[in-house]
Structures are given as C-alpha cells and as structure tokens.
Image 1: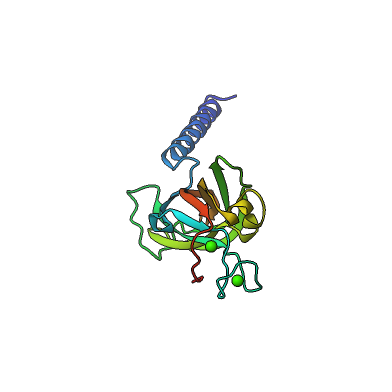
Image 2 (image 1 turned 135 degrees about the vertical axis):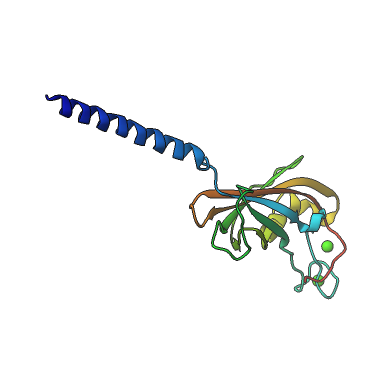
Length: 195
Ligand SMILES: [Ca+2]
Ligand SMILES: [Ca+2]
C-alpha cells in the first residue's frame, strides 16, 4: 500500500466517521419519537356533570307503554391540537400536523361495574386549531341491563368516566391520544325531550 493510498483510506474513514457523527447529531436535533402534535381535551360536555336518565316515559308520560324509549347519552368533546415545538410558526389550515381521530374508548369507575365501551368517530383537527367530536358515553343498551336497569324504579349511581380519543397525526402517522374524564350521575331523572 502506497503512502498516498494509506492517506486516502484514512481520510475516507475519517469522513465516514464524520458523516455518522453528523447523522447522529441530526437525529439528536430532530424531535424524539413523540408525535409533533400535542392534542388535549379543552372541554367535555361543556365542563358539566352528565345527568344520565335511564328511562323516558314518552309523550304520554306513562311508563310501560309503547311510546317509551331510552336515551343514548352523547357528549361533545372539544379537542385542541397544538404543535409540539412551540418555536415553529403554525397557521390554522396549514399542512403541518393535522390529526385525525377515528375511534374512542370509554371506561367507567365507581361502586358498580360498567363494561368499557369502544366506539368509532371521525374528527380531523388542524394544527393550531380545535375540533368538536360527539361521543356516546352511556349507550341505551347499558340502561336495559344490570346494574343500571335497577334505577328505573329509583335510586342513583355515580361513575367517573374516562374518555380517550385515539387517532393519528396525518404527517408522521404517529398515534395520538386525548383523554378527559367526566362524572356521570345515573338515575331515572324527570323526562326531557331529546334534542
Ligand atoms: Ca309512555
Ligand atoms: Ca326518566
């Protein structure tokens, strides 16, 4: 091996190492594995406790007749989507980091047990903006079986309900989650007409 070849080989090795170092630095400078968008729940059910009516006597106001029905409780969830790196200038409607939620989970805690609920949703929230999704919290079916069924004739039950919206950031395809909790007060409340 000539002296020139040795120098060339060493130089190539040094340059390769430099490239690797640059690559590592570049990786280190970029964001970590977390999504570039940070989503959070601004409000759920406008910050109100959900009073869940387990039975509606219908327009004749009599229980046990044909016009009776059971309301499916839905709440509005307002999601905020802001950029992870606050140094970036993000405009609403810009292409960066819109998130799309496609499903949600509801989990209850309380003295009585209610099964977790898994639902679908379609909500796209632009970066730097907010969006409102409607989620079912207490399905009608839950009110037709124990333990809620017993409330038709009286009593009340309290639950803390955790709602998790799950989706992806369009740009990075990273999963994003927004979590909120809402107190739910179940009883056979005075009947109201559905919206
Ligand atoms: Ca009725
Ligand atoms: Ca009622």
